[in-house]
Image (cartoon, rainbow, N blue to C red):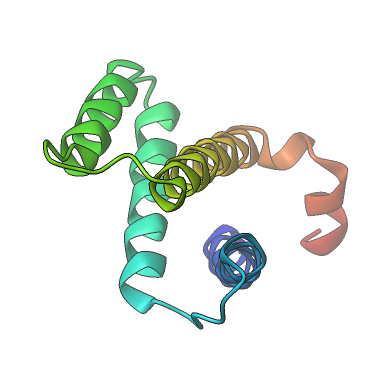
Length: 119
């Protein structure tokens, strides 16, 4: 049941992030499946690390994200600043969702909604 909840929430997040990107950039981009897959694996990595109390994995995750986004010859433009803001907010949202996954996994029996869904 927990796997189904994870899959359903990832589909909802894919729609939400796509809608936010379209509103934020004011252009229709559609779904970028590569980005959806990367986001899913990122949240899964963070959730697994937190479930196993590997808090230093968050530092590794942050370093990998930073190294991936660094560009040495990027012009400073309004679009670039908008992208940086969107990127930061998206990463923070992903970490919050991963923390929720961790809480749901660790406290599955204590959450009334889950007891109602799967008695």
